[in-house]
Image (cartoon, rainbow over all chains, first blue to last red; front, side, top):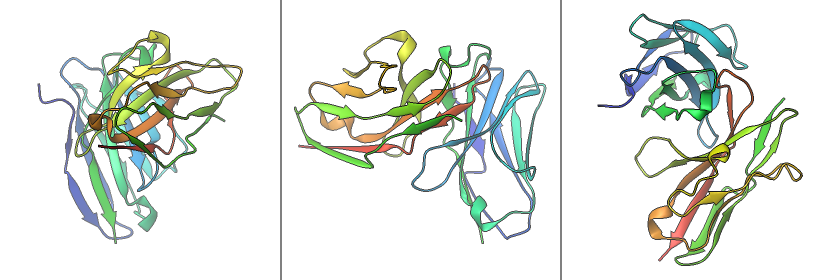
Length: 116
Length: 109
């Protein structure tokens, strides 16, 4: 099992552009969460999806959106990029939600987004 | 709103010395608390969670609701413990996790 995979690993975008980040959870995991990690800070929760529905949302503007597909993979979309969106974006999967952290969350290596 | 505070950005200890990584939280409900670790060039991974009351790699953490703390301890540090440690709090049923800013543990040989 390759674990949680994220693509691309690195990305450079210009202000105002749009970006799509992708995440494939571990096989059998139905829950996917997204986090933003700015340099020197801990990860900040963006979204959680379970069974293709949004189950939780952090304090991020509407420029951030996500979705989960029938195969449980997920995309994070960010519109109208700002310089401050430069960060490491982490995806985590777990088998189920409801008792969320009784089940371990497995993190991907992340996508490093640089906005110039 | 929930908050997790890790007051030390860097903690340096000698090999064999005791380790204590501090974590304080602010949350009005009943918290679920965790420690995550990130070794160099590796992904973030769960170290331990308070509800399991387990010891992983010699580390333990006790939830103190009176002091709203969840400090991570190990009696004898090893070089392989050098890593970034994050304290995290889950404040809802939907895996909405709040992380602290992290403490870098450096174990000096």
